[in-house]
Image (cartoon, rainbow, N blue to C red):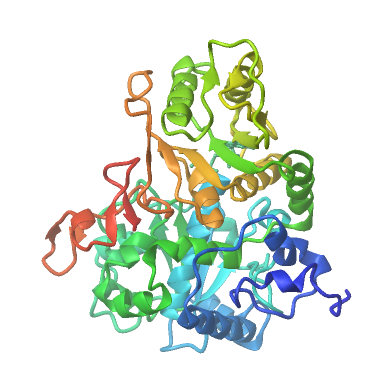
Length: 478
Ligand code: GDP
């Protein structure tokens, strides 16, 4: 490994304003240094406090990471089954679970939680985590060692597992006066979690969790917004993220670097189809209705949104031939979907008719995988490449409810237009609307006031945590 080679173009700030640590070999992870050549420079500057906390985290990770002395000590404790007071290193283990968009969001949430609680994040590699991403932390891996004692149990963990934190609270096996909780608990924060699992978002229960060296977390939700509602994290979070809507943006750009193999998919596609255009627009189509795609009402919705909001040029339905303007503008439309029918429709429209001012509109779709196959490696490589490619566009149209789109908008630093969810198989009116922020939506937040011990509308407590545009019960940072 040649550590001395210089990144592609240092003058373009390849370390993203100090967000990324120096000292990685360039060749092992080209995307770390080359992202600046494809993605526009972020208009949002990370706070100097965030940068200092990241460097501090990296030191902690070095000290506690896999196979270190401290790691081995804490593993022994885990095997022994009983806690013996505070430990040198504490961990949050993230379980690989659900679609790739969901996974990227939960991993960022788990890392934020690790930052807030001085824990070390370790990543279950599942089928393909190591194949998709580079290591984000210097020197020590973020991958959970394969001989981790609880690894064989990860698949079967659900809210009924006896070691689930919520279950243990419910059965009063532990409570806030427990002096010595067990050395590990499962933290279950998946969409179907129960009221006791949701106590994770209460300060009192966090104090108890502070005494547990191993937290094994299973979630398919971006839970960061609810951390912002906890008094114990409030001050720290406002220092880390003075601009709250940049939370996923900065964490995502810090953590998620495509592996060289995925980087090949990204850069080859970008150079072949996107690089030369004056403008790039991303359209991400994800449908949740049953039946055979493409759906005509979704095609109608795409047309209505892009034309009404002037995201794409009108077509000239009167004249058979439009003489292009002097400086003919070229617009590349990057469309992603499991189905190819939507991009076919847009491409045909600009072939059969001319754009109003003679703009050249080209439409490209990297893949059409037809159905979700989250367990297949090549499939997820393409999914990751497409999320990343969407994040290089200047304007984004995303689909309601889709974490795939959330990842693209957050990494890109682009506030998207959201295609609202169709009801009863008809295009909604209005077809789309501008999002309040580029943050992902937390789809299954708790509605609980920890102090008053009653239900509360958590989307109406503070101005920076609101209900989402695409899901009325969800929460997002703005
Ligand atoms: P969500 O279900 O839309 O929230 O997004 P996820 O990424 O969590 O899960 C959807 C999965 O379906 C993706 O990870 C892909 O495996 C697949 N998928 C959905 N849309 C696309 C697409 O446009 N392109 C590709 N390549 N895969 C997709």
